[in-house]
Length: 324
Ligand SMILES: [Zn+2]
Image (tube, rainbow, N blue to C red):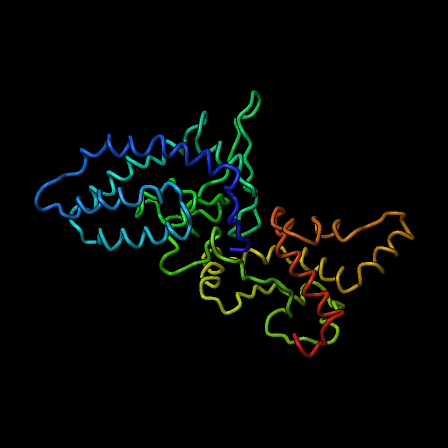
């Protein structure tokens, strides 16, 4: 995970909860006959009680609460529980994610994604997650929605906003996130954790820093992008699951260009270009977004560009070459 997006659904949370309040209780009632009751079905009784007790929290959908609810459910319905299959089937029907996912008119996944505050995948921060609604000329498209906690294992959290993240198809694909959930091993959660990953350039391979590498005087292939997970095991899991080191290799050119820009000193560079071409190139032009605030979150690779720029500024103007 490269960026945290705890406020991604803030503009739609009220509408979504209203939809859940108007559909889930009726749905639970409608499908309750699918659960077999009997003297041997103590667990079914407990699941019903669990749902009654926590329905409000499921609808509220706070990300941390969803994790607590999943852990509570695991204690209630173990992997070897004989009724597990029928309970999961019942929950899948009652919390009908497929219906919500495929709905193109009214309240559904398209309407939800259309109001998301971010349009770049938080897991890789490389690919856009924009939504285009259907119109007369185009069919429209939306990002995939990842269930941080698997909807197969926890179908009652399939519609909770704290468990749904708009992501790119590559991150959500079978080689990466797919059906995994982030409880075990624990990964960074874009809706509740801080993004601790930091980017910078480092000497390629096993090479060490030299004065000229430090000053960005060497060619691009002498460098590689370093992704520092700050000793955080969840961040390290995320980097591994989403294959970030390999995927960011393809963006070395951008990192190298921005580090050189930082090493050259912004004003000197801008002034020389201005003098010869009458073009005023700003830091915002180079980065693709203003360097202050959260603007970097809204541009693919924004985090990497920002981190590389500031880490090189520190190297060139704020720290000695012996202290990388
Ligand atoms: Zn992605």
